[in-house]
Amino acid sequence: MTESNERLNIFFRLAAISAVAFIVTVLAMTAVLFGNQNAPVARFLNEYGLQVIAVEVALTLTTGLAALTVDRMQITREQLESEFQDTPNDAANELDSETVKD
Image 1: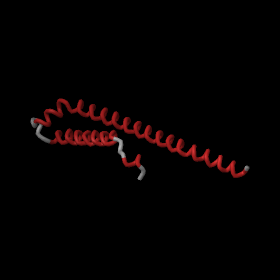
Image 2: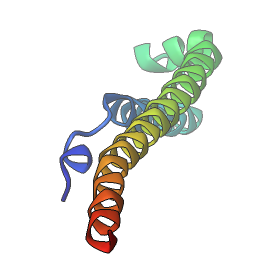
Image 3: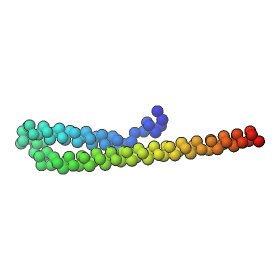
Image 4: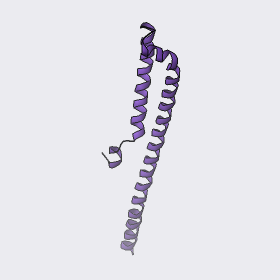
């Protein structure tokens, strides 16, 4: 593995965590339908469930887009750096081959 593959973008982890929270919330809201409506969790989800879902969806989308953006920036930077490193060597090789021809 290269050095860039070893460092993981933190936004990917945050997106995964927020997606798991979303799934757990949806499952909890489904369980509330079949459980005791007077339970504290049931009352909380009945009152604030949609807002919690909306925040989790927004958080998942935001962190997902941030992860993709940062990943693309890192890849572009690495490509530019590798092109920059390859260019001087190619120019030096061309100069050496011209010197040999003369």
